[in-house]
Image (cartoon, rainbow over all chains, first blue to last red):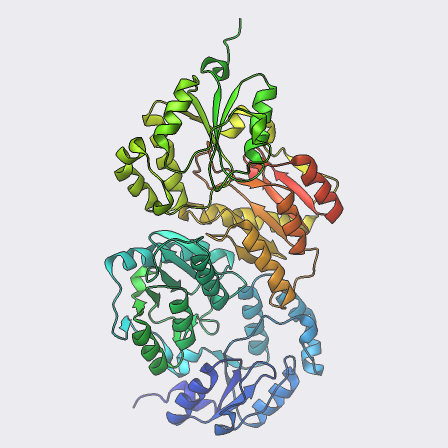
Length: 290
Length: 290
């Protein structure tokens, strides 16, 4: 007899939902697989549309006590954090009593880069007896496979640009900089830091329009990679149809990510967008990771 | 008897002038020191104001034959390239016959990053018997000294941000990315690639305005460094009063550069701007270089 998977041992899965389409995609997937879910959408971040498909309780950032009470009452032990979250200000947090007790740790967590913030938040959950899982642990089909999604394949020169971008991202990783870069013709055009991938791609589009970047439209790649020591339970890089559209506006030939450690949001829409724009979306094998 | 310096051995100094105030500052300095200069301002790049102070001939990019003829006729052997130059398109070059002969090399030079382009251009001059010098070889006072210019000193936390930024820049250097980054509270906010320092600082100002960056105004540093294997005869990083003003608009505490390998344009105006904005402008000792 095979041991029951951890998923069924600890009751419903608590999913704390940030922005974007991923939280509901993960909730639907887990729920279809037979495990009940309990969603905790965050005010100001999560999209209310579709939330009624699952039992849920809205939370403000900082309502650690409310989360604990509701999650424990429902029998949840496993927690997934998923979706975008604009790096909040300490002053946006509305702490309840439980969160207030943690405030020295939270203030400390806010110093330093995003990696530090996220691993500190993970620690808070673990200290209160919850078990933090990655979204891909509960819904592995959201991860990018190896090879191309869609009809277009990267050319030899695209592959050379992809390799240079991965080399750069692995070198820059220890500095908790962003997780993305744009390379065209072996020239690094843009590097993401706090501005996010969409803003970086808009910059490339602008540099092409104003003549600062002269590589021809239809050349260049967006490459996203997890940081070398990233905690895979949260903050994996993700791509979706909007990433494809932004890459197309930036005149790129395609997008490459690391297979098995990148989340693909709305894969059908992404493939349709990529085929429409004649962009490749490529999952590089793990050997590309340093 | 001390050997005559190389400067006087080879006749007037030819200065090929890009944009900004540095070309005239170098020309004035060399000329005040007693060595005649012959300027070659580039159409579309060099500022015509003040050019009449020195003998000069305007050139289009690609007029290698015209340059050689005029420089040789004037007895020039030493050449300095100085000033900003937006990375040109091959199609903007108006090649004369001499340049045309070099076109296979020029086309090859345009592949790859800026470092590659610049060292290839240097090779072209050397092959035609010219001797390429750095602006700091002929006008060493344009280089940033150690310590603070102006009245403000970096704090201990500023120094920690400076150290992190230098570490990042040295790690990213081999990839021919930009030469500048903004760090605040040990968090890398922005990294320069093809967009240039001014655009990167404008992005930081925008991220502060739209709440994406939440570190308080008056914190954070702009750090510029030469790439590890940069050919110091051209393309040293430079700062000037406009850099200070852009850093002030981005709400930074100051600017740090490597002493002895950064060019300071208009130092009096830069110091006045820094004191007015209460920003430090700090030259880090060479020990900061990896």
